[in-house]
Length: 109
Image (cartoon, rainbow, N blue to C red; front, side, top):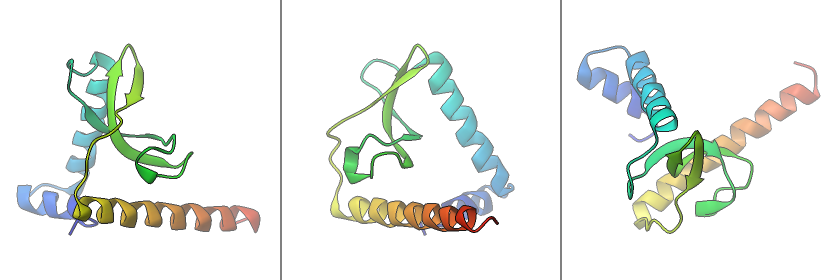
């Protein structure tokens, strides 16, 4: 269900899936341009620094605060076992996609 969330949201809203992606982009830009409220955070895809057991350098969505067109990864947010497992699944998929892309580049595709 998590992996198909964009389709599900589009279906539930009876709007094309692209609307969910567009909304996410708008939310990202709003946080980036106007910052987050004090004590508040948003989840944005950034280059991992190794937080939350996400390999360093992988682009993944993590909790951040934004201020003056800069972001800071929020440390120490507790996750239950289900959330940890879903994050691991997503990270593993990203790594697999990255590896496949690197293989394609190496063979000149």
